[in-house]
Length: 363
Ligand SMILES: Cc1ncc(COP(=O)(O)O)c(C=O)c1O
Image 1 (spheres, rainbow, N blue to C red):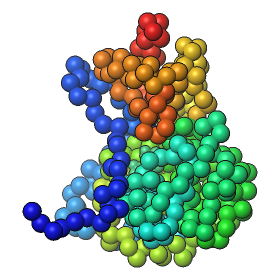
Image 2 (image 1 turned 90 degrees about the vertical axis):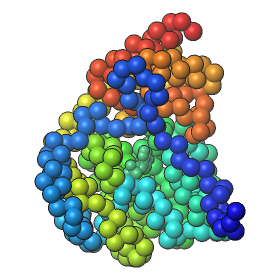
Image 3 (image 1 turned 120 degrees about the horizontal axis):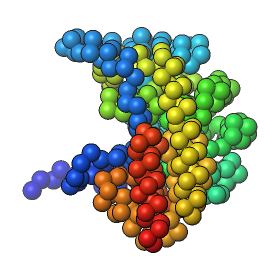
Image 4 (image 1 turned 45 degrees about the vertical axis):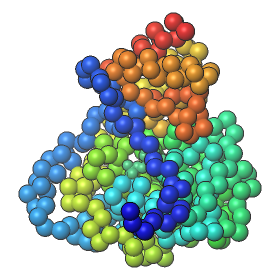
């Protein structure tokens, strides 16, 4: 026995539930639970990591200038000093929360938001408030109605995970204009590449438009680099400086740096991945709707069919697991009647659709 006790809000924090692995699988598992790129990493990134491996006895450059420069060039950002890099974009969520919110403060998100915002809010002692969505989509009026004097950060994934829906750039701009000056607007563009370069440029420009807005991004999705843990953000100068005060001096490892530079400098791989996703997302949405599983239009790399009841969604999940197919239950996101299915390889997509055809034919 000791008298060592964690802070009370740490004990209130419910840990993030990851997509996980399938226990007891009979053969290769069809992994459609974590929105990963079915093509794997860019071969140029693999080569760059091989080369960088020989030098991992040396600490990385703590300024991350080469990586930030490569991101700036690829994204048309003129001031690379306003880019910060991180160990996955989860770290950005935590560090921004740590900088700007604490006990007595509020973090605002929307009803079916990515769960790390709530994890981070609670872990830092802040309350997490959820604005209602309409038809699984965030809206400016509902968000603004939840702003209080205590609101410190608005986290909005656009497109959102797990719904796949998004607010238009016009709606984001109107929301940005209407936010009171004490609220930091964090646009999480984890799935921005799946919408396309015009959208990526539009959210970049929102950061330049007002000193209250941050864009965060990840290398875990379209870049196929989830395991190296690499994220970044583009921020107003003052917020970038605040962030730099508390990030670990070597928070990104050298393999991630090498992979990130190679990957973000090769638009062809990103375009190929996006085109595959657009094609298969439409095919999967149509096929699921044809099975009677209402599937809203998604702008990301996953779809969200509705099985009509929580029991039927759970039965479908078990049915898929029995065929070594792993998708994501989203009851924890307030969506118990649905499953989230990532867009995978053509073969894996066919496999999950065939299994669900069998499932819906039988019950
Ligand atoms: C909306 C959103 N933001 C952030 C993340 C975190 O990504 P990472 O920490 O791998 O960069 C995810 C991961 O699924 C996500 O869906």
